[in-house]
Length: 318
Image 1 (cartoon, helix red, strand yellow):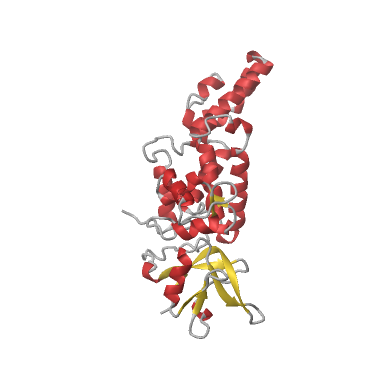
Image 2 (spheres, helix red, strand yellow):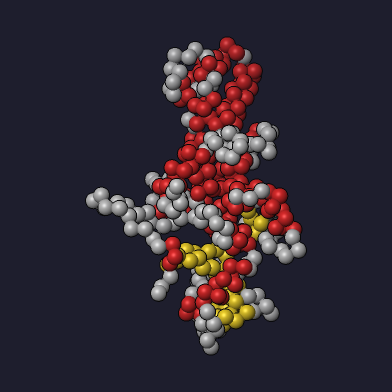
């Protein structure tokens, strides 16, 4: 069984799981919702202008669907009987597929150049969020609506990647492979394991800190250069024992081994600082904090406390 360590493995997994997640065959099946929206829209037009006047132009409009296997269908209704085709041939369908890939697996389509992926992801998330917020989308079953679920999942992944915003309860349960009830318990528990945001979700940095400790959580790898096979030789795998995640401050600086001062690393919020002589122990302590904080020098050499807004994967130096 693959560990989904590469982008290609994750892309293949996304294709396999899209229409068969958990016990609900339609969990991520956005096609049925797009097809339903299409049918409703065409019926509205038909009702406004009359069936006879609408027949030819509406049939022409759904020709991309007919091209998938029904080129000789007479009416638009005959064409859209193929729900899968009616829900997958449109540009928004491709965007939802991309959003599911990104939200669930933390990767982008291979065709997107690495240097443009951050901007591409921001545009993707904004587009699917706007589409999911449409009144005709929200008017459908909100609890089971795959369009809304995919948009929320992509938005939550983007919050984790940028350190801003929240992860909604449902997306948190998906990414952590736990129940929504468990997430709510972690938000309301006396220990304050997860930090609740103003919208009722989990504060992004708190969510990421907790998720990084969950076995099976797939951290985003879209920013990494993808390995390619050279002359048929296999890729050289990265030793997982040498990979760690360190917090990143808003100015782009990270927590690293050079931040030892008088033999100690100092981590924690003001008034709650902890001193560690070991970098590994200090990093472990940062991982237990809802929002990691550590002391480091600024450009003038003055030591102050900074807060993490994201996590970065780095290779340990021995």
